Length: 243
Image 1 (cartoon, rainbow, N blue to C red):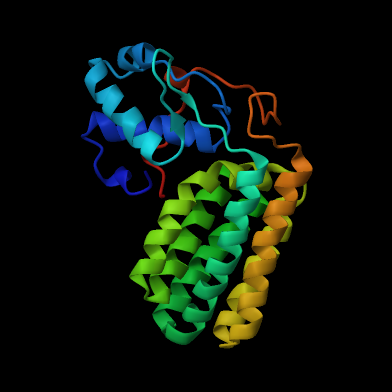
Image 2: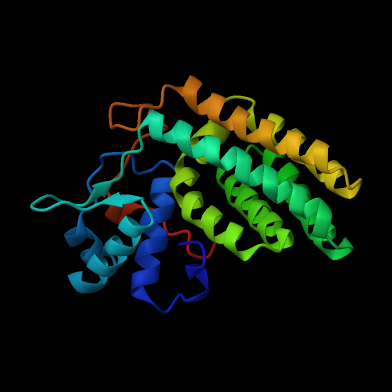
């Protein structure tokens, strides 16, 4: 999903970005219907590219498609969330160790620029901007780690956690603590301190999970509600965002 912003001529990609970001940013909740007829009307297209887009979102774990029912936003139960975050904790610990091992001065400068953007988003309490910048930060770390197999595994996990990461960052004082954690992580990278970088990364992931657990998240439509939901056809298209 995150790589599709470069092809804005494709209706399929526009639908994927619109619906996917609405799910990630909480405008569509777990269990909400995704109305393909309304989407076709909104994007002024036939239902064929809509179905293709929804199938892509299903593969990404964001949408559920079952026989004789409308597509709906996928549910992610708390037990599954805990399992995913346990895996993310160790994988990103490995990423941090490899960043310390392989990062060039240019790599660190890229991370420093992203850290500055995180701080600016936290200052204005812009959760959406903070989330997508955080995605860029994590992607830059993965590239710097110089391990393509690790990147592939992280990509598979990443989309399923974006909705949860947005929820976590929306909670009181979370942006401030997150940006401070990232600043400490960047210092560990710059000082080439692998043990500290791994410890900070793992703690950062654990704090994210703790915030989700404390939010009341269940993964169902009866779970925590982060603002009013709206039909998929009314979701805001963030396809021009720097993701």
